[in-house]
Length: 331
Image (cartoon, rainbow, N blue to C red; front, side, top):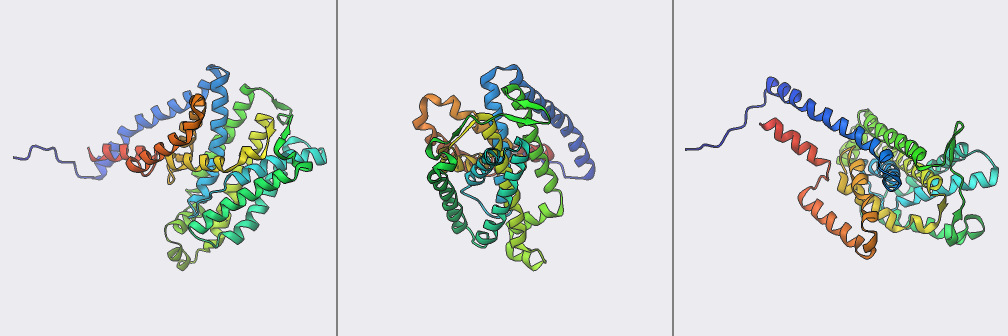
């Protein structure tokens, strides 16, 4: 005799009951997110520093996620981060303009360069695109190193003034965390808004089957260029924030290890979810600080984490929410 409980059929009534039961969970998650956002202000300078870096990484990895969800994976995402940081700082030095106008012009420069580069390299597919983006990031790093009279070379640029917006000077960690948090939430809001619009759906269609998307009238190259430009601008914004928060930039800060870290955050958080970059940045940003005494084993830890995630959670940490929802729906 079979004594196993059989799952209830999924009917509209059961679905409404499931949604009603899931609302308290969503409310609890929202309250936990608010508490997590407020906690760094109360937890001391070290936690505040980690929270600022996590927020900046959320902005950058959201940009990488946008490119990935249009069907291309960039292995050189540190390049637009470096370009945004250097362009915004050098514009202040050359023109004497304010921090905000220089940051905006720096992002315009990143967008124009990304549009030009994307028009050329987005015709490549798969591993060829990955290799070209890696080569471009190395090219940017070498140019920054060789142009020492302008960029400071290996010594970098120090003494960068803090961010100032409409008279508000973000010269302390408490104040800068507010700015970084707003930018992280804004980038997440952009992702949620975008993938509820036809443009976001077109990006996902292009990623799923470019040939089929092309046959329905979608211009695949144009959609991927738009995704590449927006993703690069988000990365450039992260670079602007890094320059103004740390007060120092150098080419070595934007090398291959930075690109690998961004990809790792995206994969571990969840490539197909708008919440994946947030989860990946929140989990992986504090780890290098926690393992500061074991620098040589950090990459081993990342590799082991990637293997475990890909083996047991192919969809990343964000897929746990879907698994929990499916489990509750089947009860």
